[in-house]
Length: 95
Image (cartoon, rainbow, N blue to C red; front, top):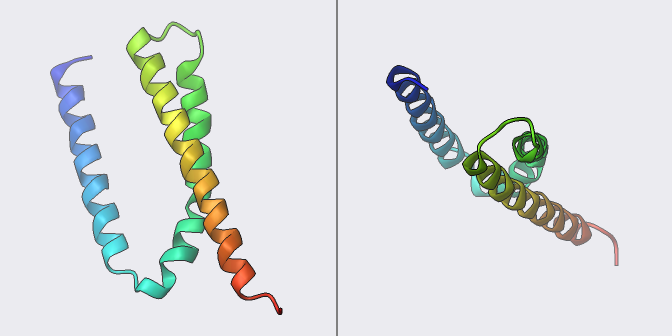
């Protein structure tokens, strides 16, 4: 990977991080839980990408370890999102 490619990838990472932070900061607190439960689909895409990175298709061992870490973290995020959504929906059920 050339230095130019690395700089472009770092630029995209920093820009996406800043944009994500600004977007979430502007959301009112009452909408945080539905917004986060909706982002589980994005974590599902991360899980698919992490499974591909863990595959034996010529990736380096560093990529495989990072893929495994991404797989674990995305899975925890998805399960936590579903748990929060389930708890939120239980609040609206009649007793």
